[in-house]
Image 1 (tube, rainbow, N blue to C red):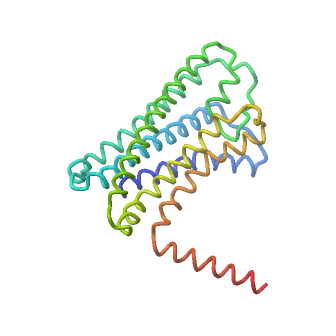
Image 2: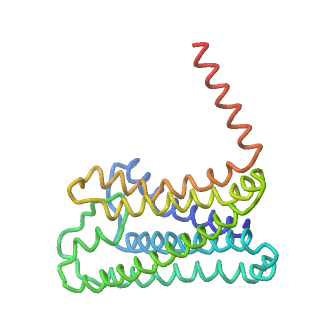
Image 3: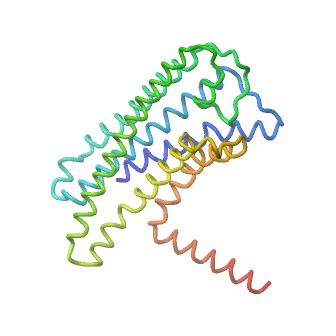
Length: 257
């Protein structure tokens, strides 16, 4: 589990550094410019890291399934070599997806200006600038990616259905709580990742506006990778105790004032 958490942390760090530093630099220098090559690099890195993260979360659901439903076979099914291979497959699949989509997107002729409606380069915004029917090819690739992501989502759901069934068969309430608590961080991260992404790209056009689109893009591109480490760290007893003391101190100062 900790090996997968290390990979997840690296992916989260990559997602943050792909979009936030450039946006902060633009804000400080009062500009909105990004070079053509920089836009392509940003799109590739974000798509690569976000895709790899979702595939890795799928692998982590399998890790939790084996740990809870087949604990006696955990060492056999998820040895160090198997973990490395699955993590490498997640990274490689994300890399190939990012490379394919970036190459296909930037092969399109862009003739509708050069202004994007977001704070970073993403495929739907770039496709709006295309004046060629070739954009349907990229749309088809996106549909394939969505279906692949939906397959991963189904796999995660099936894994957790089996996990819930196994947990409910544990006779001790304390045992059920302890076992299920190992899944809560992963379940929270998956829910946050999927819900923000789905809302960003499938929200009704009737409520769409430039300001809302900007807020939503920040929500799905920045918030999940920033919050994920905190979610997993909340299982650390010392960290929870420190946060509790900090909140108590802040509350007491507010009362005194």
